[in-house]
Length: 323
Image (cartoon, rainbow, N blue to C red):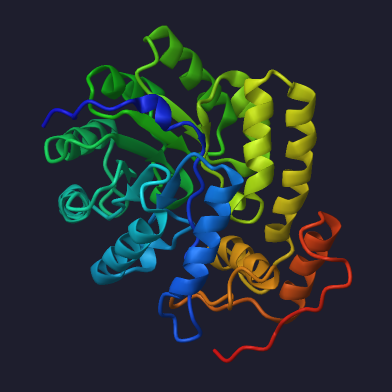
C-alpha cells in the first residue's frame, strides 16, 4: 500500500515517548495524563510518541492500548503530530495492531523487529515490507536491540527508506557509531529517512552528527531543556547544546540510583517516581507485574531532582498514597 503524501520534516525536533500515569488500582489517570501532555506541548515539543517502551506498551492489553490512544488524541487535539507504537511479537500481530490504530487520526506508526521467534536479516526486512502493505501511514523502524534482541542493519534501513517502505528510524540501540554511519548514508541516499535518537544522554552528539531530532523519555521530566537544546542546535550554539546535555545527563542518573529492581522498574519506574515527586503524577504506579519504587529508591531520585533544580531543595518526599 503506497504511503499518502505527507511532510516528513514535521517528524523532527523533540518527540517524547509519553509515560502513562496510573492510579493506585493501575487504571489510567486521565487527569494526570492531561497535565503531563499539556506541560510537554506548552514547553514546545514538536510531537508525541504514544505506546512506546516508556509508555509500557508491552504490558498493555489491546483494549488498554486503544484507551490510551483515544484519551491521548482527545488531549492533544491536533496540536502536535502523534506517533503510535504497534509493537508486538510477530509480523501478523503487528499488522493487526496497525489496522486497529489506523482507524484513529494519528500521524505515524512505530514498529520494532519481531521479538519472539527471532529471524535473520531477510525476515526482518520482510517484516517491515509486510507492514507497509497494510498501511498508508508513515512508518518508523524502532531500533531497540536490548528488548527485541535484533540490531537493525543500517543498509537495510536505507534500502527500505529509498523504497518508500519506512520513513524514519527511532534509534534506541545505544550504538552511536552505527547511528553516525546511518546519518551519513542517509544523506548520501538523499535523506529518505527522518532519523531520531532515543539515547537521552548523548542527544548533543546525535544532533551534531546530523540527526533530525530526539525521542527522549527523559523529556517527560524536563521537556524545556530538550526543546532549548534543539533550538540551540538549530542556531549552531553548540556550547549551549553541550551545557544543556550535561544537565540532562546528570538528571538521567536517577535511573542509576535504583537498587530494588532493574529493567522497566528502574528506568520507567524512576521516571514515574520523578513525575510523582514533581506533582505531575499522582502516583508512581507501574503495570503488572512491575512494582512501584519505594523507600530509599524514591529518596535517591528526589536527591537527583533537587540537585538539578527540578524540585525545591526543601521539598518533602511524598509517600502518601494507597496502592
